Image (cartoon, protein in one colour):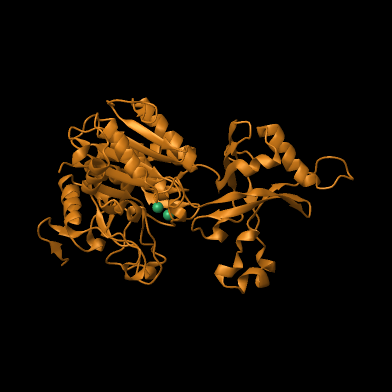
Length: 473
Ligand code: MN
Ligand code: MN
């Protein structure tokens, strides 16, 4: 016999808990598939934080949202606030005044990747190459010998802005980083510690092999790259200094499994939460009970610092804009008070238990694919260092909310104590005194170029966030 939670008659043991799949009727199965298809196309079409920002703004505009920076007075359907094209906030007015606090969901739109250095171009032994720079916590060897695409935003001295994309045409050319063959890797890789075997400075991108110019010219491969930059995008080499060029896995997000039950694709951490947060916000409709805020942060994967990260006053600014857009004077005291009363979900994905690496998880508290969004009371490292821990009363509120809305969810922790650890933007938001807890879908192969989620979990995560946005208190 399994232990049962008497109040809800739910098995506490995850092994005996039915997955979402087992409780879906035909109509819901169709919903899950449609939602997954739309989500996959979002992942495929928005592979940088700027592209994510643009996608969300376009959706909001379609719904009748207005730019809070450019408008004054009350907004009807909603408003958005975009900071530097990389950090975004959405606001939906509620029946209640913002003074009584918001329902707030925060996610992040950046993902681990390789950036190009400001001066990336060089040539060596007959190749034109580009030097890359790590962004975020990635396992470097996963980025070798695979197709990569280059997504970029270039700001020119004369004020022109150029969006650049290379490597995403089906059947078209891509970029790649070479790896050494196993026959010769003994000294440079195999006998080294993994952490030493793949130095970041060896992640050099293969960009050209066909020389340009006359036979006696020097640097003919570098010239080949420079010509392409000039002819294709109107860029000089120096323009790369004022560009954001990001190398990401090439190709679309796809279905995974003989049963097509999963989704495989890059940057589901944390664009899954961005997508579900957006869908939930829009589904909450006009004038839900509480005023709603959704924030898509940048720079989460590198510590949330910088002017577009969560370690800024953006939430305060957005809240002040929401006051103004509700016809209220955004007095400092009122805004701070509203924020400290607010209820928030730090929507971020959780590590799913990997059948091949079970030893890093505490099985009782590990997330399982297919059991729905996770509720992670605290993250951080061993000893809860650097953790934002949700207080008991807030955990009770969320449990009650999810159960009341028939959400399949699971109580989880990242991994065993002392295996490592991680954090989310919850910590930065908690600075404002609000109630916040981490919640998001479980992911396998997190931070890899091919992250795996369950279609059912993605769908259920959006439902959970819809329930949260609709909550009254
Ligand atoms: Mn994340
Ligand atoms: Mn992450």
